[in-house]
Image (cartoon, rainbow, N blue to C red; front, side, top):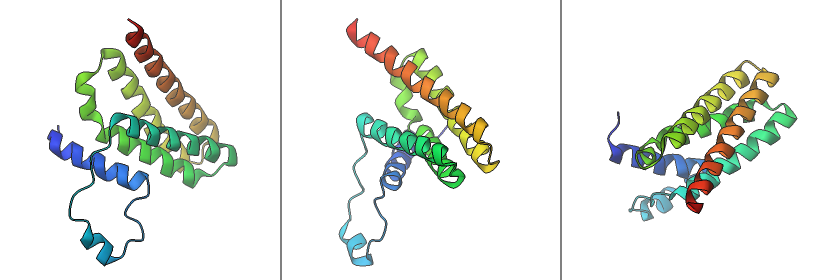
Length: 143
């Protein structure tokens, strides 16, 4: 198991890469940034996951296996980097997070194999896990 600080730094790096930060910077601009980027909060992580999921749907519709693989791989990295958040969650969250990660990993495999049906089914599994998790937490907030 990685140290929580290592995971936090990995999450910041994944978030920066997933949102496009750090591309095309001049060396002077990079030097001007001495402080590490702030860690994204949970809402920001969810927004990135949503954007990647939307990109996956578009890639599936276009049969763009390279984009399917890239977006799914990004979701795998994000889900692994945010594992430390799970310490404060419920068993249902743990279960749905595992389903989400496995589905994203399957999407990568199916994209590499150019298996559109398999990728579509993995996308559906991933989406069901998102909806189930959000439904679970909305119900908990009402209690």
